[in-house]
View 1: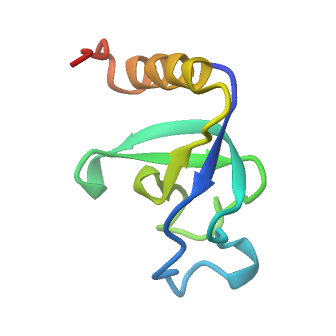
View 2: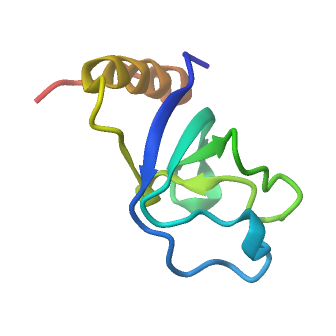
Length: 98
């Protein structure tokens, strides 16, 4: 994976009961993304691994859905580059700019 980058939780609602409260994300809190994967069983959405919370033992919820987060405002261009690399690595595709 490319370098870790920071995200902010924008949606901490609807915690699955398989994930203990102490391992769940908090609204408006910053987290460090250390891994990502395309999740075929979730409609090919992107799942994120966070440095601060390890839910790998909470099957079937081993990843946090990327829709729950936004990139941090600081260093947005650097984060965009990291996300672009991550998408390319995860999906095997180049990011197409609009």
